[in-house]
Length: 176
Image 1: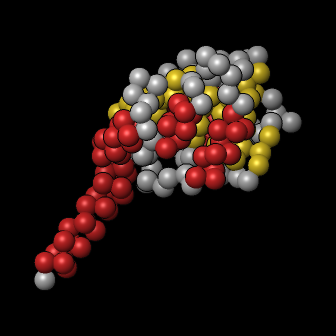
Image 2: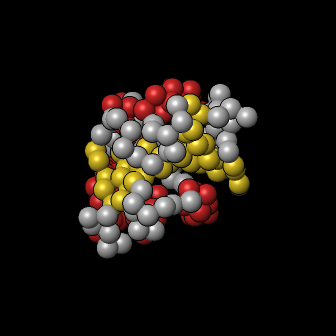
């Protein structure tokens, strides 16, 4: 009897924190990037010393942590408060406090112009709006790395294994 009750409570909690809350806060569901995709995102980013990265919808912080491990300042924006707590715990466990940061905020309301590398693993219906936001906010030389989903109008400068890299050139994104 107790096992069934505990299972029901855990199931309800899972749906509440990873499905219902994100949708009510206008966020996506929690669907983390797998380890291979994260590794490929870091590799394709071609990180340079002194750069800053940001992960939009940072989930449990795994992308932020991997970028911080490469020696750059890494940020993440997450709207789900439970995932923010989990991310911050993961950052402490990784020994990256002061190098990796998770912000409890809606990334749609944040100016992204300070970042050199932007990583995303969003859903298809968000990519058009995100493309427009990034077009206007990113500085020249910024790179956008997208796991799985593509932008409707931009052409990637490179891609491997469902990871796409887009580069902002001067005042526009090259369309090839």
